[in-house]
Image (cartoon, rainbow, N blue to C red; front, side, top):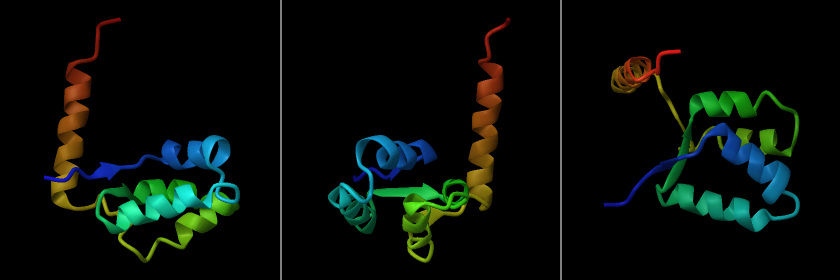
Length: 97
């Protein structure tokens, strides 16, 4: 069984700003694209929306992938139910202050 990794906003921002700027390390971004095409990495629409707020190379890179299967919707009932369970678990496990 192959795992699917969901990338958060910070992964893209940190990679572009610090470790692997798109203009300097295109190979990293090509590798990410390859892993996406293999079904190993994806992200979600809220990450897309956050990243496209900018007006930079990263925002352009993300916008170019909007029509592909990169950014998954979170509006479906199963995802919303899971979000609710996670939120409840977090609230139940919150330490007393």
